[in-house]
Each structure stands twice: as structure tokens, then as C-alpha cells.
Length: 201
Image (cartoon, rainbow, N blue to C red; front, side):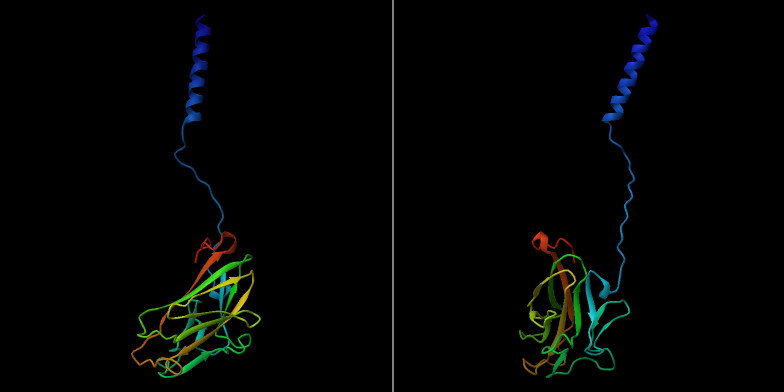
């Protein structure tokens, strides 16, 4: 009888221990996954930005980033009451300031905008980024006055951008105290998700 009682008690202890282990939560876990996120030059990124053939004012800088700089040389900036075209808006496929390419294997909406570092003091479009598709069609213009563009880019699609800086040749004349420096931004929306910035910036 004592042996039967011990056996029943041992079975009960094992059952209780098993139940306790099954109901408890773990306190630590380690799970490894591979992530491949190489940092590459602008031209090789998901949204590729490649220097065009309009001269040395547009270039890849030492950080492998596309840069537009009117002080790249011995000049101190753009002349007042003048107009500069980096690329040819009549033939952007042959002559452009830079190219934008969707290097992903799915379509994206590429939203483009330009924001000034400081107010330029007028409402004229002094700084324009004219975007053309591979057929030479105008698909949008971005300005420093808040005009933005949304380009529906298929996988692998490329766009040519012509930069026009007008300091008074056809618009209100800017003075030597004016500054058109700023940030050109590209925000990517996933077409399949209805344009919700699902893929980040």
C-alpha cells in the first residue's frame, strides 16, 4: 500500500511540474535573422541619383552623395539678374543635370520637393527642377516656392532632371544678399499600398 501511495504521489508531482512548465512564460530568447543593408553611393541606392552631363556644378561629393553647388570652383555663387540652365529642357535625354532612377523591382511613387534654408524674399520661381521621363515628356516641376512633383515610377524607370536657376533674368531680380540654398528631398510611396510612405524615405 505504501508503494502504491508513493507511486501516486510521484505521478502527481510530475503532473504538477509538467503543468507549471507548460503554463510559464520564457524570460529570454535569442533569434538571429540576416539583414543585408549595405550603404551605397547615391547612384546605386534604391532611388538612384546620378550626376548628369551638364558640367561640374552637379557632382558626386566625397560622401558619394549627389550635390549641386554653384561654388564648386573659384566662383562664390550665381550671378544676380541671370539665368542658368544645367541641362537642356528641349533635349533632356541628351543633356541633364542629373538622373533619378527607381532601382527597386517594384513601382513606387517618388515625391520630390525643395525647401530653402532661408526665405528668398519673393514668390517667384527662381529655382526649378524640371523632371522628364525617358521619352522627353515633362512629368513635373519642383520649385523653391513649394511646388512639388509626384512621379509614378515603374520598376527600373529613369528620369532626367534639368535645373534652372533664374536670379532675375525672367523673374524678380534677386540681390547679392539672396540665398537659394536648400534641400532637395525624395519621399518614396509604395504604389501597391496606395501611397502611404510604406517604404520610408
